[in-house]
Image (tube, rainbow, N blue to C red; front, side):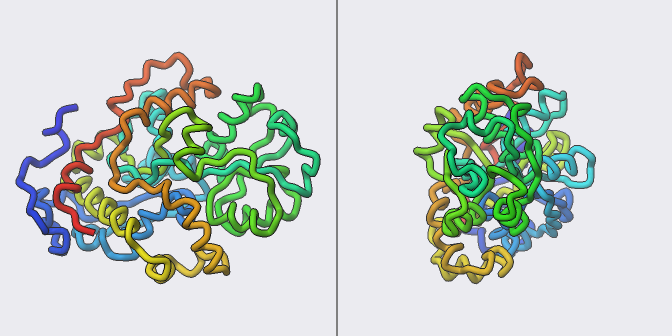
Length: 345
């Protein structure tokens, strides 16, 4: 897809990040100012850049009125976009690959996370004698929602140990207090979830971590390369029809990513909703230190990221095995490159 498909071609305005107008950065008139975004588990650090862009009015500065709908998991957010009730998804990059396998063309246009941040752990109470991944056979594993990035990560770890998703039962437990309760009450034997949920369970001594993707090093160990995570993606038709609006969304998200690189703990705490903290500010900040490295510093897709994601899915997902996936149609750095040339934190 050529660059002119995505960009308006008008010159970028240096230092316009704080202009606070729909025409900041010179992307041209917005095709629409109303944008609906679906997300699955907005309180998670996985989606923190989205919250920052919203709470610090970066979307509004771009002339956008963004309505964010929060779902139990990424797979539910995806369904909202496919069904037409959402324009854009803040979700896992690998969903663009799964959609293409079904002949539905969606494209990532700004990366939020360069590591999945997902942790697979077993309940110390339910599985006190756990030794290897093989011990999970026949067990209930809590995920944010079946088909979400948490179940994808767990399925991949299981596959490497010779198990399939059919050997376990994936139970949707959400991404907040409900997930914690499900583990502590014994409704599930293991859990694949994200921070701050996992740090809270760790601190309480409830879990034993068996696979961790909160750092770049751990992610490369698990997946064998850079594994892109949270991103904004939309149907190719939306992007083609709304290039200036897509650029405005990207500008706001890149600004949020830059803000997160220098934000203090108190600035972060004062920006996110109180409910995100799970009743413990210190724990939230501790969890932030665990995952800060996983945040994309600039919104760019790493060169090897899409291939790593495809290889991961092909390991265990029959819907994508043998399918001719054109990775070049699942992502673009064009919007981010333009934003980086002009956006100030």
